[in-house]
Image 1 (tube, helix red, strand yellow):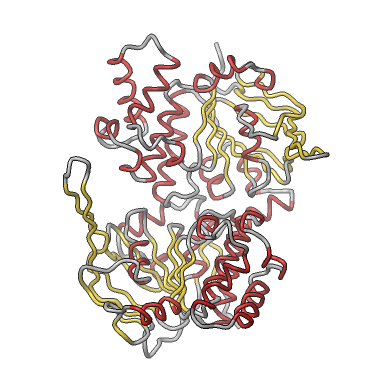
Image 2 (cartoon, one colour):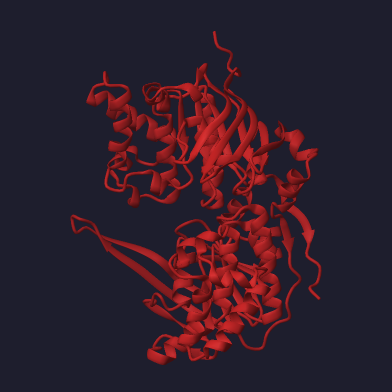
Length: 546
């Protein structure tokens, strides 16, 4: 009988090479790693450390140009490195399955959820009848705690929330009860409560199905929450490994220590003096989205429900809440991308509900936005210099002044002047976000709206970008509306917070007060859901800025 904690995956001496014209470069070198049944092993490191390449090598899903250059990958007794295509077709799904970071791209948008899960069952279990497949699909959707499995089974991916889609992908991964589940950053873009649910779900399902989990992440907060064992990767090598508690409490390698130190904790800002006049004052904002299905059934979603707030000069107002709480809708209203059904908003001393033409252009020059995904928000066919100078020149700034402003901003965000001639794909994710920040500041705005601007970044890069925001805000004097689902991040940069839930503001106040003495049950739920434990989260109070 197989031991419940026997090893499922044993990697020894794994190396992966990238074939380049005239040369070969190793992107993974001499990796050794073990995953046990009923245990969660976390593979942690920053972007480019080799985590995802290692997981792809296990599944034999390496992209063109990459190849295994040495070592062994034993999966439940099967040598994956020498497996034939026929062997792999059998092993994938039955023995090993994968949960990808972005469920919307992992799911077929034109197939119903039940059909996609059923397709896997039909291929690997052809003996199952249609009735048995449907019963299994409903069982799997119930296992991952999705509400109303029959309705979810008939839904298309776009009709589900991000957390629900991720649960569907997990259900697909569990369909054949594989020995190993590889989860590649499965919670990075999820709000804190959904993230907590997904992490706890992995442990519950792992025990129930006698599987092991290889969880790939860049966040030691996630490691502290669920990991049994940890492997730390840097530049394609494992630099430290061991039991999770031992690595967290007694890390030895400087890189491991830097990752732990970069996990944002509660660090409350000193209180700002009360301003005489607010830059933004909104009262009673209402906005309802009305959609119709293919059957013309009408559906109404209350995105904003009597929302009131204000932003003072030089202040960072944080907006926190789960996906669907109305955070991004609030940003769109402030940017005038959406018009509220009711309520008033006064910005820079004037009511903005009826701005048109040049007045609207002037307003948008003063209120700039930094989006969540820096790659999607930069034109891939335009060089950085074009992106930084286009806005100012369209608003009457001379070419020479726009170029000088762009070079100054690149220096401020820590990028060299030669970046002006390069394309977005030539930069890392953190560098691209710095370019987006520079582009927003090129308009000399009085308000910057940052919508999940650091949520997809590694924790160390995230810390750098947060520090950059703070430095630039202090030097240039703009105010910020900072939207995030990560309360740890919010405590580091926000002076005040508003907590949103289902379109309503359920709590508002100084950041310290909201976290240390929450007045609403929903706020308490968000705080409890933060991964990592209180010891990692509480790091004192920020000193006064000079």
